[in-house]
Amino acid sequence: MTPLLLAILLAAPAAAELEKSCDAGEAKACAELGSDVRDGLGGVRRDLGRAATLFRKACKGKDPDGCADDARALALGEGQPANTKSALPRLEKMCKAGQARACGHLGDIFYRGRGRPQDGARAEELLDKSCKDGWARACTNLSMVSTREGRGERSEELAERGCDLGDPIGCSYLGDLYANSKDSVRATLFFARACEGGMPHGCAGQGFLLYQSGVDPQRGRDLVRKGCEAGDARACEVLPDMK
Image (cartoon, rainbow, N blue to C red; front, side, top):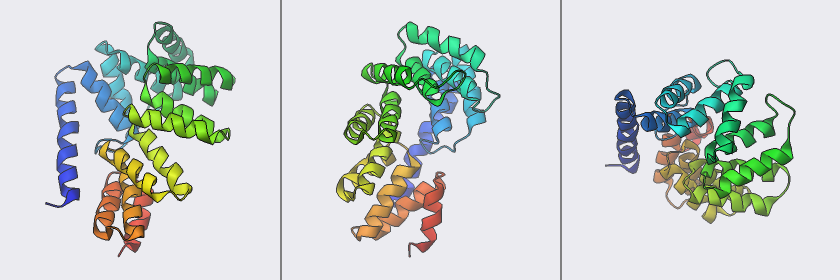
């Protein structure tokens, strides 16, 4: 069995099991599946409308993460018309109650300037708190903010924390950072971790480096194909040239 086929067979049941559990009324499974659908992780296609529906279902089932993600989707208008007036007070209430995910979402929204003027200082404070409280995506988002502001070393540290806490987007972001700095060894390592976490771009990045370096061209092509099939547009662009 090829590595690509094995990966597909392993990824598909995870999404299928989450959907089965969600349909059976398990709110946490709805929230987890919604996150995968929103981000295009775990072998499922990105679909903001479906993700919003899953978050609403999770929140109705009293799942805290589902409620935070539901409020974020409403604030940003993902899969539905935006309503920051309704969504922001919900996130602020959850954040004040100590929910790290809600604080992270609130920081991201403040950084974007949705519903109120952009507040970079407050956004960074909220993202930093959420990251320190253990929500991986806040570390990744704060890493991206640090990169935009020219704080490369801090960006790297935050992305690595996000990756270590289990955010494949953080691992993929580190892969890009190291690839851009010509450190292909570390780039391949972090792309591989992202791929294992279900991130299409991680599979494509790992595959491209394996192909380009000549270390394992066949596995490289298989991984780029996997990234393409999972929705990474760049992987689909380069795949025809990988003979």
